[in-house]
Length: 300
Image (cartoon, rainbow, N blue to C red; front, side):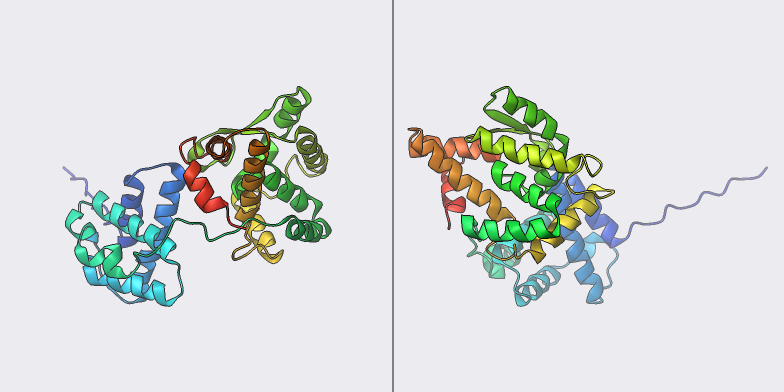
């Protein structure tokens, strides 16, 4: 009688363990995705520095300390390092390494990254700056210029702007029916849809009509690429080449939208607290983050 030979499952590599535990730490899709990217960077650091360990149980305090020192020497911002350490701690806890995750030597203070503020490092793009960049984009690609216009008009994040083509006809119909809000569904952070209050319906409809005209010429898309990943790479690379980098970044379009929304709400007679709360909802942050909106988005 023949016995079937059982093959042992190949043990997971350290990088696989890190990635799996980063996912198991939970959270919204984008949060998990970002955590996995950050923990992958840490795993790559260990490999590049010839730290030959094969299991998460072998990670030492000194490895994390030296990783953060290296990142600081590369000029990485403290806010980014806060996020990276949060990802590392959550991943360690998911793997059952609570003692290491809470070790005093890898607290933000001990690592020298405790001074970071949540205050935004970006600023709102001015009308003059936007027009100059828009004209450059128009010469490069009318579709790229239309995507910029959609982003600044509705206060969209990059992925929301790129995926906005899926909602364009719905938005057009809503404005034609004199609706005062547009529903943002695709590409939202954490998959949380939101309503954006439209203060200038005619201008917004003009921007949407222009985008639709361009979409008809390229497979119903604004950024006509085979996949979302390729479309996002095109968006990031193109905006970078247009000069949207550093303090004036693609997110600066969202900052400009925010300031205009607050100003318009104030003009309509809302109190500052109400204007900030309503703008916070337009951005998808909920009505309880007015103070955060004022602190982060008010820079010019």
